[in-house]
Image (cartoon, rainbow, N blue to C red; front, side):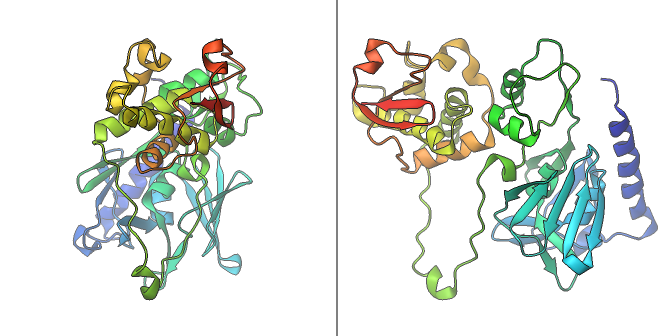
Length: 344
């Protein structure tokens, strides 16, 4: 693959950043917080003057050092408690301390954890996944090691559609439109497309402060899905294919229909049995079901598996703008969510 100027610059910045460890500027692995992972960028371990922190099973890292390791330029505005990050691909990110929001090229998105300053380290911390994805990098966990893989922008080829790109990279086409600030799915050859969709863009994240000690005793644990990981992933992949571009409730509703069938008696009694039942779901028949699911579709699958039921007792769904056969239209409507009509 031909290296772009951004890729070449990233390699140079990364090499310089990691080389600094040899001059005693960076802390040793033994100084890291207990239980914190080894962090690798392009398979090279990153050390930092301030160690990662583990809070509520999440790895928080200094925004500056991870962003710089990924080729970004980071500026601190003390008068406004603001961090500005200019990524290797030209994005501008703005974060304010204790405000659960990030601005990406002028568009604001919610965060589930606000940027916070560690008083002892005098550094701004944010969850590792947020920092990496905002810098257009994928996060891959391998035991106690986490790999950050910087991704180049995708250059649109002649005849290539945004929907096809979304399917290839396992993201919702609506999320790619939002991230790239596109007005439509029509894109010109040569356009550079960002394909790593941060959770802040893909999901409607909100910040919920930790409950007090008194509140903690009355908080119920979220139920766990009663299927194995393979079944959950299969449901997420079906949701991804059947509900691309639909609102989150619409995605959950598709999963809701599958689970209704699992429990109904007249269908197979497993997710895989329902999804692969002959003649039922186009993605299973065409092989599109094998494409990876987006993060949002995975979250929707989990919601459906733990009892969310925006489609009530529906056993069918269809888009009336595409399919208006009597088979569907003669069935009583349960609800309409987005483009899908859900029926019993």
